[in-house]
Image (cartoon, rainbow, N blue to C red; front, side, top):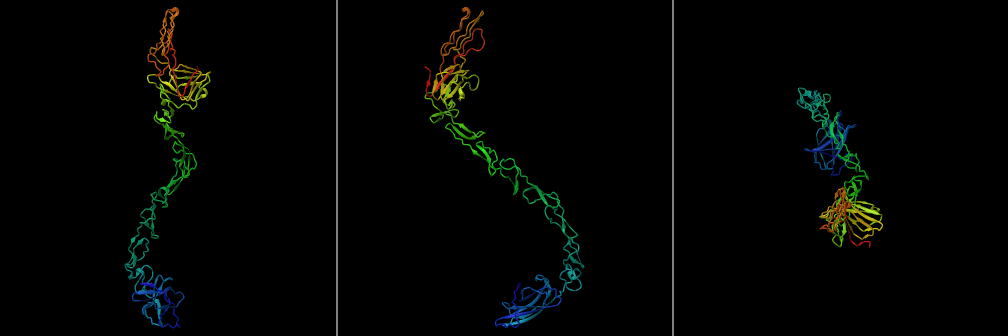
Amino acid sequence: MRVVLTVAALLAVSCTPSEREAGLRVVVTLEAGLSSKCMQLEIGAGSTRLSSDSTPLAGKAKVHVGIAQGTLPARVELRAVGFVDDECLVRASEESTLTSATFVKGAVEEVALTLKKVTPKTETNCEDGVDDDLDGQLDCGDSDCDDKPCTSLAACLVATRCTNGSCGLGAMRTCLSPPNTCFRPMGACSPADGGCEYSVAMNAQCDDLDVCTTQDACEADGGCSGVPVSCTQSSNACLEPTGGCTDGGCTFAPRVDAGCDDLDACTVSDRCSGQGACVGSRVTCEPTLCRAFTNQCTADGGCVFAMVDAGTSCDGGVCSLAGDCLPRFPYPPTNFEVVQLRAPPPAPTVLDCGETIIDTAGTGLPRTTNWCRNQPFEASIIKQDGGPDAVLVSLSGLTISPDAGLTLLGDKPVIFAVLGDVDLTGQLVARSGAATCTVGLGRDGSSSLGSNSGGSGAGLSTAGGNGGEGLSGAISGPMGGAIEPNFTASPLRGGCPGGRGGNQSGSPAPGGGGVQILSLIHISEPT
């Protein structure tokens, strides 16, 4: 065991030790021609050895070292050891003779040592170019080095040994540790310096350790590089189309306050947020008594409602097919049900601008002419059991002024459902609703010898008139249309067509029109 010992200071010769002190004063004489640059003093007993602090030798002829006994045994062995470096790290072949010394209580004993070069008996290093044992033979030229490691002049030979006075045998250096994966796994040794040379594996796959590149490949200089990740996008209008790569993923700056579409029809004023999301203001969709919000909207943000079942009670009334809450009539309406009504205009209708016409001919809703001041007109086509289709008109109120009139034309009867007052002081002419009749139909006139009779009139609720006679009474006109045996107010229909004159073509003239007026309040008529 070797332990560094910090020795006591050199004891002065003139000092008289106390009766309990014991010490050694070691004087080391340095032999001329030493190669050692540093010295330590070894002290101990048996296999235990302690070393003093290092002492540089430059410019010295002697070294004095004082040692206090401390815990050392009474009898110790001393030796000075030389080192080839200034820090006493590499041992030299120079040391003193191992000398015994005794600690005497109360005294300082002097010990003399001489540091001299020790000549080894054998060659100790077979590749340093030095004759270690001073026998005139060095390295592999000394038989002491037979079969010992040596350094060959062939740079690519390794594990060489001294054989027959020279350095030989060994094996060629193997090159199996390329600098990186872009060099081929096996290289060749360079005779010039014994280093390994590797060729580049061009275009081989590699990893440039950059997560923001792809298709990494080896380059001509053995480096590895890849193609930068392309960060473009077009799917999100709230992010810039071009971004940057971070930690292997693309990031895009938000387009704050840019216009966008959040694909929700129930939001409006859609704009981009600072987080790159499209956010709109949600529309308010308030359901009504007869309409329920479906959580869907039209393309322009309008609310889509589902109609509750027609006939459902609502706020004192009943829900219509159109989703409106309409008041109940105080009596059962004839020829229609309240649920078939459309919501009437908010204000009563006033016809005071001359003749107004409602024409029910053809398909679809009726056409109006001179509907005063473009007031709202709400109407629908309904089917009557056992009768023709009818036009059902919804009104909040109806007034026909004395200097105005309303004329009904076409092939469908008209029903006015008025949820307020009716004031009829003007003229109402009904020519709508002509229908095919049975006994009520007017008969065509006859023709004979250039004499033609007239056609008869139509009947319905009363008998129609007979047709007129021909010239000089030669031909009698036909009998008028009879009373329809099953005529009632329901279903509503217009009068029967009249007959055509003898030997006449064209359509027969229609009979009286069909019109029905129902009021929720009352009807005023001129006296």
